[in-house]
Image (cartoon, rainbow, N blue to C red):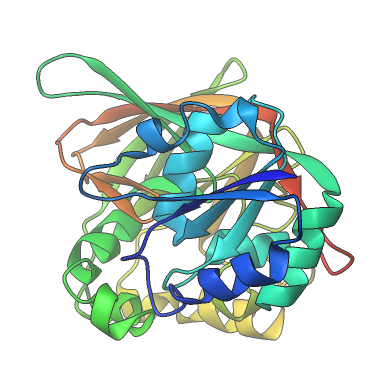
Length: 303
């Protein structure tokens, strides 16, 4: 078996566990190649010959995984996600057993499930159309503001940095969102608009009930105008009903679509999978890229 491991050594607290994984995976006759992305090697360089391997392992946080998967989508090479980052939300949505030995076993067995990615497009300040795939959530507004404020501290503080940045935003800016989809236009005011490919966050809370990474749909949610403290009903609903089947998500207006064009007035910034987009564009579009990734899953997977 030829296996390519793409690892971000600066990804997070579990970074060194990838070496335990490599030892557990390797058998006589195997060829295991490790490439370390960062300064000197970009994801595009690390994935250039991906089709020459039997397996690809992506080791890092959600941002690293998102970047690498965007380059190898549609390659049809089985991909294992190894959780080395701060939150590892995408890995948690997959639901594989997290131990290095268990992941090595799943990698060798190579059972796969085809899943979707989202694609976000926007216009740069120079007028050029930019794009990037996303695996969890892209959005504008409150969530982008939280990511921006958490950025300096998330390496040292981990997930608590996001909680503290939310507390530091007691009165989020309200914007008007015009959302074109499926021949209709939704006109909504809110503090944020999120577009989800997957939606399970910390503590197994599903932000968007019925959201799956293999359903060929994006889930779009607009958070109604509110101060941070006024979002407590939604937080309580998430704690008491993590799946969202009973209490739903108060203060969220949610719908599903394959493609949408979103105008935000005023511009509230954007992010995807925890990565900030540094411009002031007030228009972006999102679409689903169906069944473009062959994820390796085990018996514990939610897929």
